[in-house]
Figure (cartoon, rainbow, N blue to C red):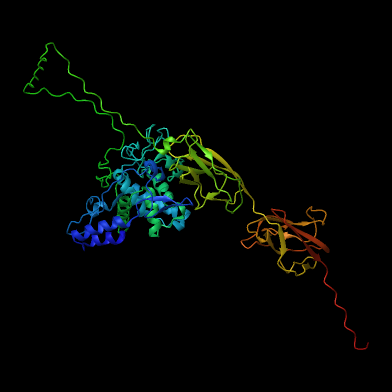
Length: 574
């Protein structure tokens, strides 16, 4: 509906009345919000709920204000739009050089790291246009860092989300509340886990367009979204800023940029002027309180107010002070009432490499009196780089809203190939409370049975090579044991596992004799085929022993014997 509507407007095929009806239909057709499903994926739908507490930390921007200017409409008759059309088409198609380069580099990076996402650079440009007017017209230095900080409004709940300080003011200069920061308008608590180093300088700076563009691309590509699918595209955009109007505006710019853009010098990009909060967005950093000015002397003396007449009873009275207005109580949000996190029955977190954990991390948010608190965002983070485990969907961070019992359950953990322990940390979004850490363990893939896939005898003549290669199949509890580590050694005897120094052998890449093969791995079908075996001049019966993680062992007999001498044929005179 979005693309069709934009196309109709640009062809000038709609009257004002028809266009107005289309705008209404467009708004009605879009999902009103983003919610989190049982797997931690954010989805859209007619039943999507608004962000609890007005806390926008479930989005990249904290649902901060954005620019509502729309691309120019190439139609001779003005038509009503959501927002205000911007400048001429040629001017609006220009993107500042450094900003454009950052978008394209980020999209190239994502095409390699997450090819299934199908992220177009034009989507980053559309979001950058709506969030900051392409870094305020490309007001960046040669390294891509904004020359003047770009900050959103204070997220103090007064007309905006209520997000208490999470960074000590490190990014936004505010140690009381958070503010969206930089050209892609990340809030500090999101940047904490979503930040990227897009220009390779060793820093993750939300004020740098290369870092911010790559972070935005990764943010849009999480949850295995495929942005070539309209439903996934809508979900990704809404997760960035939870507003139907925001979605429509970004899609309009995406369509516009796909039709063609050109590079303009940094600092010369078109500046938008209309914002969803009614401001022009020109203020990029906190402004000091204005000093009261000294009024000029009036040309005509101001009239002196008459003195009040004394009351009839005689004497004088002082004017009564105006009583102060009533102080309205402030109702704390659910998040503000949380005192601590409690475990909610999380079991032992163990899994074999490549498998899904059988238990999920579950916590409960409680008040100081131990009462459960619903509608609170809890963040689950896989800590450190010693593991490649993820949550379902391939992400290392998931945010879940507590249910009516105050419980938040993380998406299922999926073990990677790295073994050992790692930490899952749980914290309350928007509060600086002590979190809960859970230790999870990944064990190596195992096999408990090994069998040969052929019963052909393995024989060879001295100095020759075995005709058949040894192939085995590994299973664990009767199921295929794939990617299991194995070792093959030519041993001295059944009772002596020492590597033999004579008899059959393998060859390495240089043709040298090798009698132990380590770092072997079964394939997806649990099969392991060993390299070709050769024999030296020693005859006899030899043993090849194959072992795997988990204790499976198979011993294979190899026979080296001289070729049988054919019996002479009887002579004709016999």
